[in-house]
Image (tube, rainbow, N blue to C red; front, side, top):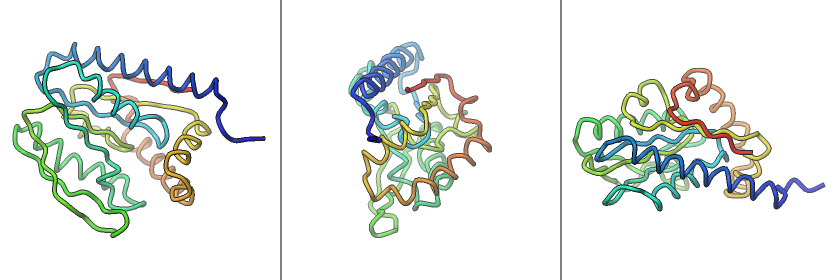
Length: 197
């Protein structure tokens, strides 16, 4: 029996993610901020990256929006919490104070920080990734999103996306997600909850 999701389940997932994007477009319009901050959290394979990219594509306010993925910040496979804290310190805190944030991308192959990037406080900001929504980061965001999906859906999507490079790390990463859920209760911090089948 194949572990691949059926066509009908793929369609249902796509519809759920599209509905989430539409709801967030409305939320951005309703936020009443010139440069809102959106945090998108959820476990691996839930659909965070898809929602974030589509939200950028459909961004309802004039001008550009900045998108930063925690996949570019985590300093290795044992560092979910460290990546989220790095985002808060280097990106979210400066943005909230109206100053430029500076962060360095994590080079997964070289296993070290790489080139520097800047975050403009005069532009809206979306930060997506597992672990991003904590009590401290929640205070810095206008829209806080939790996306959930069953484990089999998430694993199929994550492995389908990242291939065999991710497979050996699935359990290791899931344990860190469990700690994040227990320590930070991101679902309770969210202003928007989305369930993906």
